[in-house]
Length: 294
Image 1 (spheres, rainbow, N blue to C red):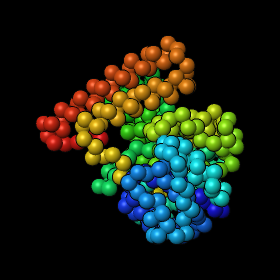
Image 2: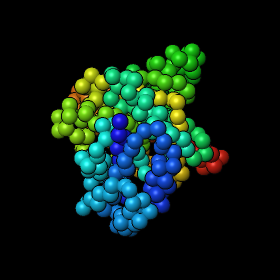
Image 3: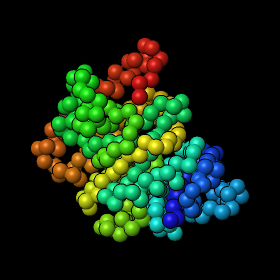
């Protein structure tokens, strides 16, 4: 088995170098190649990566086509039978790639697999998720009642933030920060590649939904942990911009799944009201107590 690790860089030379160094240092039990795609970074000289890492396969995109398009460029050049999409702001501390690859081989019904992701301070990121629905958005408003349920019952119903990521489980979709799948599955997609309709954010959920349409599941593997820097320190004003973007993406995905039906409009109203209320609660807590709610 050869794992092709696709990393997309855009103006993050130091962070990307840290990621590559951690992959080379930690990956021991599986053969791998690193395919680095530079998305036309205006402030990075992509050739500098080759000076530090002469064994990587460097692809210099002529444009910043976004996360999906960048990954597709890397996949096109990949020689491995297994693909790992790895964010440039991740750091490995153990042989996570070998462990995830071994786990993937155990599940013929699984398209995409991810692992436990944490922020640099050790706090958990929720990477095993359910597709959004009207029912679950309404249930999410009743958190005190959900917390009275037995833990595994609550997890099976909701996943997401209700799951401590403390055991392996099937799920609807997994994080694109560490997403592993067999390259052959792409041949079953309409264009034989990952969907590029989103420039950045939302792609992972869309891809997993498209995998599910083919009859496959997604899987969360708790046996290893990867650090993912993410945007944990983003300022509140920037968080509002991201929230609005995420809301628009969620509605685009729901439209893809359900069309512009009554269900879609009901979902849109509930999700938007809930997430905006949550945002202003977060901002208020931060202003009063300097505590950032994730």
